Length: 314
Ligand code: FEC
Image (cartoon, rainbow, N blue to C red; front, side, top):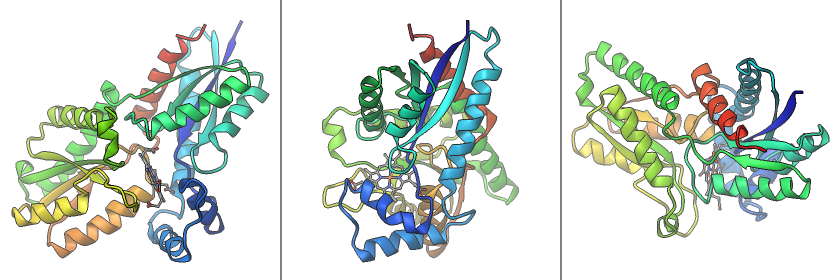
């Protein structure tokens, strides 16, 4: 008999329209509405990004669809049928809605995975907590993938992206060793370090593994997209890092936002517009690696980790 396994694919979420930005932003701010000025500033950032206004929605849709296909295609003995449902942190369908849909489909067992490879109690941990509560209330047995930051196929896919851009620099006349690779991820409040959170260490492990595989000798890790709150956030921020590198006469920089798996605001605005503008001001060349989006190699990573967690369901 085929057992149906639900897969809750969790992602940050993005508004569906410009009108939806206010409620989305209010949700991120735990119910505190933004000021008119803050709202306009965020709407302007969405308007400025290239490749569609809210690309994260389409990318998450594609990744979820591709994951379901991969899980069922690779399932040779057909003892499981995987049903993937989205659960978004800050937008519809919310994490709780996704689990509700699984329950309505008669699913009793499920795996939860977040489209972010590195664990922090303040990011992935928050998704898992909400999913667990809803699953328990609906009688679904659920297990979770907490991180997959050193999965060999992930390191491989990211290393190939770094190498491709280094080739590009070389073709343009630069030496590979003269390019500083900047691995980056979303900053979090500094207090996570005192909590013994693994986020920073996992990000450094991913960076090191990619650098080794791609033969990169000149690299460093930096943060990006810090929130605008009064408490201190992990730094240095990428914009300050660029300023520092310019003082050290570094001319060629490659941005590798390894904490993200998709094109969205934090990549297409914070890096492609904001960081590019600083690089231009400093007369530096800045390239960025291509995002993973629905690259089959990335979908294979998700499929592999979901299947191995599914094996633990009884
Ligand atoms: O394209 C899009 O529409 C969404 C892009 C987006 C992604 C994303 C990922 C992460 N965030 C993380 C942490 C925080 C914390 C706060 C925070 C605030 C924002 C705001 C926007 C936003 N984030 Fe985000 N994040 C994205 C977008 N994020 C917009 C609000 C305005 C701003 O500050 O720019 C601060 C919340 C607070 O005020 O308390 C903390 C982390 C990730 C990576 C892991 C993940 O994807 O979950 C961590 C994508």
